[in-house]
Length: 364
Image (cartoon, rainbow, N blue to C red):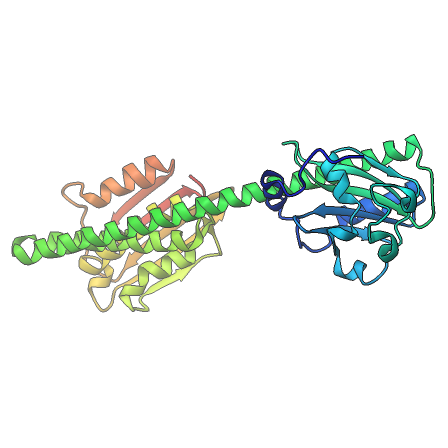
């Protein structure tokens, strides 16, 4: 038999490397195939060999002698499988000591390979990366049925490899997406910081803008905090209690009583809700219950049927009067938290304290 392919061809070696199988640990899916091979073909040994540039790596083996079984590889001087790779055809050897292609191969004295039957492991691209082989330590005539069974088993191996390759491809894509998202989030964070700096400089230049500027900076800070939480979690949900703690942290006050179960929010819902909570906190500090020493706030929530019900109840502060006109808070609650999230926000300007209730979906 003559070789018509180059086992060291760059395309083949690249394809082999991309399977991520070289030097990988044993895996049950491949070990089942080698066990089945020995049982079906009544052979003492079987190997799934991946042929590298100057060695063959055993992804799975059964019945090999030491030290090769533990080392899980041999140099190509001890390999029959390399000839399966170069020919891309089954290799059938009844007595290796008499076969012109392998009679001088060191696998005969070192591994006891006398009878050998190997079939190629071929990727969909056509590259042959190795061989599935059955080995006998005595001369043997392999039957057509033996070749057919080993070929079917090799297809199981290739299904396993295809699954691994697809998983590796998906991991690579996901990693690339994570890098892009991280870079985008980093740029958004920098942009928010830049906007805050511009507002701060504008306030210094015009004292008349001070109150409006500080309010706007507070809203940007709320966006930055919720964005930081989303960045930490990636696509994962954000716990409502973490969001609440982040918004209440600047108060350093125990006058807000918080009570509610563990609830996970989609990042989009968390972002909008953080803006709503920021407006409530800001207004309570400036005009509401938290503007006096006696004032208190109760923040409570429940969830059921994939919906969040949250209430903000103020008491003990100055008498409450409904606003003469709709401000930013009204627009935020009605158009964003309400309409955009397909939820409902109600505000009750009771004289003894503002009460706001949210009924929102847990996912947008």
